[in-house]
Length: 157
Ligand code: ACO
View (tube, helix red, strand yellow):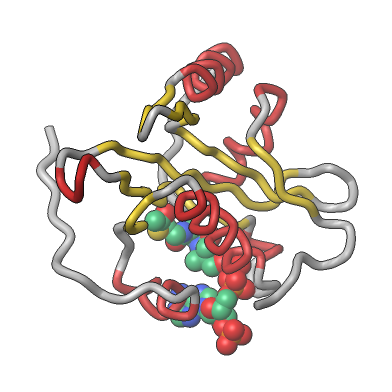
């Protein structure tokens, strides 16, 4: 398993990460005109929402960033923990919104981020961790230990 290059670190998203997270997410898709206030409100919401399992409460949203030696955000991603009825009211982790800044791709930061988020979900008791991705990223997720299961579908407004 690769380790973070020297100077890089990984931590939970903070409300001060507005510019870094919004800029980084632009490599993934349209972010829209998200204001600093909207971002801060979203981070506060992520920090508030909990999921309870086997008498233990934990944060449902687990947004993370990787920063470089100057503290700049260079990658971001989230794992959401859902409680189900299935599997004895088990927990499932959903990996969401993974993005590595264009000039930082190819340094194993994406793989490290997926490893970190997957370990976090599994250590909280999730019986599986799942994600949806584009065909072009299948090879990346296979390198991260994920396998193809089923078909992704959506319906939009
Ligand atoms: N297809 C096949 N293999 C890949 C791909 C790919 N698209 N991208 C990376 N790999 C391989 C690398 O070559 C490397 O292989 P190696 O171990 O043999 O050297 C391994 O996967 C790990 O690569 P990383 O360096 O960790 O990849 P990187 O840091 O560049 O992150 C990512 C990959 C996240 C796909 C990045 O390119 C990115 O941000 N792309 C744009 C946004 C995006 O598509 N995000 C994923 C959305 S899906 C979701 O959010 C659930």
